[in-house]
Structures are given as C-alpha cells and as structure tokens.
Amino acid sequence: MSRKVAVIGLGHVGATVAFTLFTHAIADELVLLDKNEKKCEAEWGDLRDTLARNDYYVNVKWGDWNELKDTDVVITAFGDVAATIKTGDRFAEFPINTANAKEVGQKIKETGFNGVIINISNPCDVVTSILQKVTGLPRNQVFGTGTFLDTARMQRVIGEKFGQDPHNVEGYVLGEHGSSQFTAWSTVRINNRSAMDLFSKEERDVLSDVPNKNSMKVGFGKGYTCYAVSTCAVRLARAVFSNAHYYGPTSCYVESVGTYIGYPAVVGKDGIEEVFELDLNEDEKKRLNASADKLKTNLAKLGPEYLG
Image (cartoon, rainbow, N blue to C red; front, side):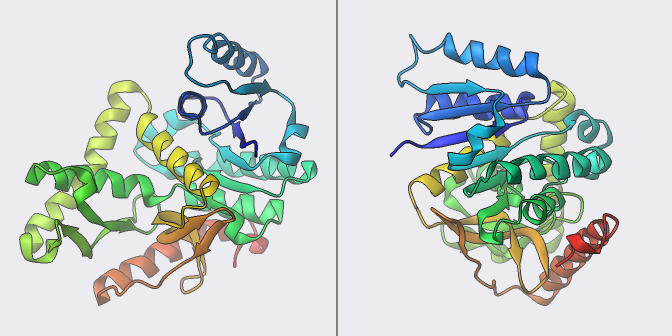
C-alpha cells in the first residue's frame, strides 16, 4: 500500500521534514504545499533532482490541495519561527499561526481528507486544537509533536551528564510546548535508577533549565531550529504507518485537563490510540493543571467554540 504524506509549510522545518521523509523511505508519495508557490516548486525541483542518487524512489508533487483527499498523513509546519527565536516565546507566533491554522484547517476539510494530522506549528498545543476543531476530525486523528521534542532535549541533557545514550533515559516533559512546560521528575529514570534519588531538588531545578537554554542557543546561532523537531514529527509519522503502538509524549487531548497538552500517549495507524493517566506527585499535578489553564485561556481568546 502506498504511503502518502503531505507537508504544509516549507520553511526550514517543513523542508527538513520533507527531505527526511524522502531520504528514509518513509513516504512513497510526497505532497508539498506552501502559500509561497515559488518556494514550493523550488523544493519540489530540488527533491526531484535527488532521485537519481537517492536510495529510494519517491513520487513528489506540489501545489495541489486536492491531493490531500487520499493522503494518509498531513504534517503541518507553517509559521514564523523567527518570531519565536527572537522573543524566546512560542506564543509570539500566536496571532499569525492561529489565523494560519484556521485557514489551513478549512482547506484540509474541503478536500475530504480523513487521515492523521501531525502538527509542528507553534504554539503547538493551541494550533493542534484549532486544526482539530476546524477540520472536524476526531481528536485521535489530530495531534502534535508537543513535548516529544522537549522530552528529547531533556534525555540528551541527562544522558550527557551520565555519559549515557539518551535512549537510556526514560521519563517525560509535560504540559504546554512553551514556558509552562516542566520535567516530571517522578517519571525520569536513568538505566532504571530514579532521578529523584540521583539528584537533589537544587540539581533538578538547574537541569530543568538546561534543555530550553540549549534550544535557544541553537535558535540564536542558526536563526531557527529544524533537525530535532523534524525528527520528532517523522518518528511519529513512522509510528502511524507501522501501526507501532508507540508510547511517547505528544500534544494530545487529555480528558482530565480538558485540552490538548504535552502528555504521553500510544500512537498507531489511526493516530492517538490511548492516553494513560500518569501517577504524578502533587506538585506535578498542580503544574500540569496550571499549564492546561494557560492553554485554555489563550484558546478562549479565539472564541468559545475552540474550548473543550
């Protein structure tokens, strides 16, 4: 069966997603969409010129929204990442990307698309919520990268501290993909040793700040970030195509807090299959609820129809 993916938004992130899908045999068909048609056609041409040297053949198309009708996975990567980098606040893109999300969501809906949407665009949880509302797709079919990226950054920092592969670090960063996110230290383990036993509270507080500082260093140095978040989106797309029942943090709808938020879930062929309640401590529960309240407050600014 042909695996068809569309990437909407071809800035640094979207183009990196498209290139990764193209070179890793994850998509058989790839559809490129962007409001900048010259950029869209240019990315299409650059990828097509790679075919004679690429290990896999991929049928690449561009500019036709009707191609979404039989697309399996849509990855949304629109927005102005420079605004986030400049301010350090992912909500800097709120006015632009909430409008973009409504427009893109409506275009997706009009095609009859009934696959899975994986959102990267910031503010990730808010944009994911808007896309779900506007497209009318079931919540399980629309989710975002969310704190999947932030968790990876945390795993890198803890792994480096112990000279370990980041894969050896378990646990989650939860909440908004933004300023109210937090490391749920009660969930973090290194080679099956609890981080609560390995680090004092002061050490945990210091370590909690390092991943975001690292990401801002990358952002200020390059003017954007692209590799890490693109890898996260592609990993989730692979989980959908392989029906992997992959368990990891995403921006998913969590009933207990009433909004899309960074939280672990099981990802399979239909998107989010299940969200398991974590056994968090009281402080972590308070921080999760506070983060959810922030997200709902911002969604309320767009109108009551975007809540719940």
